[in-house]
Amino acid sequence: MIQLDEKIYFYLLAIIPVMVLAFFFLQVWKKRTQRHFADYKLLRRLAPNKSSFKSALKLILLLLGLTFLIIGLVNPKIGTKLETVKREGVDIVFALDVSKSMLAEDIAPNRLEKAKRLISEIINQLASDRIGIIAYAGQAYPQLPITTDYGAAKMFLQSMNTDMLSSQGTAINAAIDLASTYYDDSEQTNRVLFIVSDGEDHSERTTIDAVENASKNGIRIFTIGVGKPKGSPIPIKRNGVVESLKKDNQGEVVITKLNEAVLSEIASEGNGEYIDGSNTENAVEYIKEQLNQMDKKEFEAKQFAEYKDQFQWFLGIGLLFLFLDIFLLDRKTKWLKKLNLFNEHENE
Image 1 (cartoon, one colour):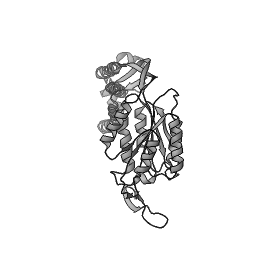
Image 2 (spheres, one colour):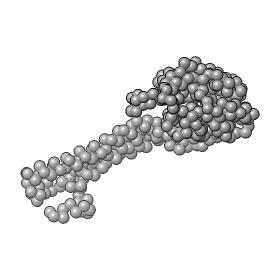
Image 3 (cartoon, one colour):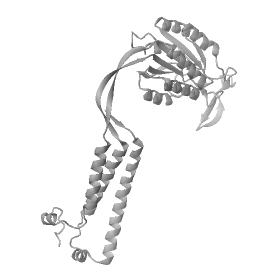
Image 4 (cartoon, one colour):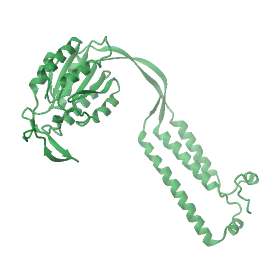
């Protein structure tokens, strides 16, 4: 397993093609200048020991030296030992509402971005819990299976938007049913589902049935409300500019409201609690306290340990190439001249 400490230094490799181009144009310029001074045969007589290939060889050595030095700055590390470590945690699934109503801007910058920030901040507070992510609107879609890779979770989270599901609407029951399939550990005593939504639900009766089934399977359901109870229109944007507002079949502007009653009922039936997500800091702190109070399930996870620095090898090889470049002269070497490997004095 390889780990790179300072990936930003890879940008320095951009100097390599620049140097190659500069060398090429320099050689073209030198040849043109020499032709104005004298012809090829006369130049060979004036400078009989000048090598025609060593300038290119010196450039190759210089580029190799710089490349290895840059890799050394990146500091590659190799995991020399695979260990099985014990971790304790809770299985957590986030079900994020990605319906069009989440584009309402009654909470800055909009409900969806606020919800994504809430989930991201919650993930930042986790230690060894396993997490999964579901996107839902008119149907539910698995976004990330249960994992301990928080980096991947945030990456998938940021890519979520209201266009990812073609079926619009808000079917919370579908999200709950899908979440129930995420918990792959039958011995896990604490299974938590966070539903992050504005509470609009187009299948309230079947949602309660889904909550009851989830509760029987030991899943606690917490709901996080994003939006304002007074509601807001849904802007339709193109290239970040509002073109119009979403309207219903009668041509009236649709006002979407935070339905706290639905979210509270779901949380109550699911043996959890409703959390107001308008204040990110307060909501995250409360959720952290709730998770800390839960019993943790011990599980095993394999990971590479004892990463060892390898930068010294690259720095050493890089300095060796630079040393050879410095002491390699442009004139012909006697023993190479005798071998005439590059046919340098063929036409002398």
